[in-house]
Length: 608
Image (cartoon, rainbow, N blue to C red):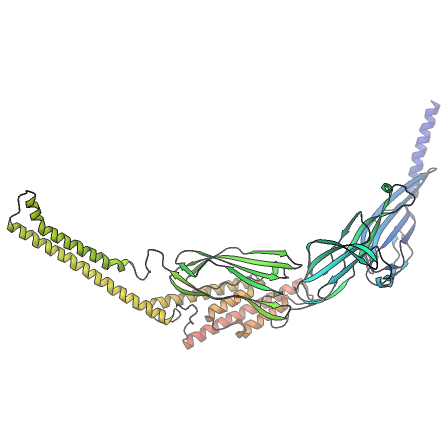
């Protein structure tokens, strides 16, 4: 019993001691900071270790004071507790990686944890070139094809990782740049090369950098973190060798992004190559009422799909259009981004005749020549024929009347002949012949009836022929005058109403785009409306008020000056309201001018 009592007493004493020691070491007694190397080359990393003696919160470490001169990597934390002769000792260790931003002498400032502070540490960052004569085991290089480019122009960024030995594991982060889209191009390339007499395994990775704002920016080099085998001379078997962590960072590159040049009044599309193609049925002859599918594809090199403008669509008014939703995609090929926009449109001609489909033109900025160029599908002449087996809507089936009349007359003659010969036939068959009196009466009545039918059919034929000749002359007259001539004929009036309807529809569509603040679709819709309003006689540049408002709007949209989001939205709203007022004013002035001078519509779609 005594032994058990002693054991119980010792157990409680031990637990009480632990509790007292835990309370006693609740505070940090001391704090120390060390680094693994000094000096350090610009592309290398410093491992900073902060050790707290005593109990400390694992989240007490604050790395924000280090951000002024260094890029701070991932921080790890570990705790250790030991008890020796009832004496409890606890330590907490924080380990983080620091990447220098530039060359020079820097100070790691004092770091404070629970009232204790570390001593400042002076660090010297030297350039890589000072030890270029020494073959390094691991390093990263960066390169870019252009250090000066336009807004939204693609930059080709190349990273190379040099490894003198195999690595256990590793990761290479992507470069970073403010206001830019960065996309990796293709798969990594691996090859070997000899540098400064040392053989390296080289891993090459390329990125497409598309800046979204103008100004000077720093393209931060990517960070490589890996683990290699650290040879341990005290271990006989390689299985027990420990790994060693290495960190390298690629050099930073400064780039200058220029804004959109002055005078650009179209959706900004900088590229080295832009083309527009179409898929069209074989031949240029179509049938009225039958649909034709036209697929137009816009392809641009070195841009993302969000930058592609809408494809303009202009068609004569006597065509019904059924557009499908456009598709966009971006792929990479030959170290560059390739973007496409494809539209599919079902076209149904409603009337036969000869028509001209206007050309499709898309302006773009050539970054090689620094000039505006145009991707174009030429205008196309097509022939629309009537439906097979039917005639023109203006020439109904009356054209078949002459042949029908001829057949009827031939039948009547046969009937008359058979009627006069029928008695003889009856006599020859042994039937009682008709007497001469009654036979003569029947023959006269039939002859009179047949001639009345023949006269009526001939009269119908003459009326039909006269109507056909009249219609044919009117059609020829309308074709010679052109569909745009404002005469008093029904065809010209219908065409004029089509033109008016087209202008109203284009104007309403333009107002909807402005109300929705869809600036990317503004220019093509605006040009469509101007074409409908002026019948192709004027262009956007001739409307000074509208053109000036559009330039102000795009200058505000692509301005490099940083403004508050609320102010920018207010300015955009004001610019759109001003543009709407200029459009309404120009519309009224043009209509008054056209009415006063009695100008006729131009012949946009001539019939051949």
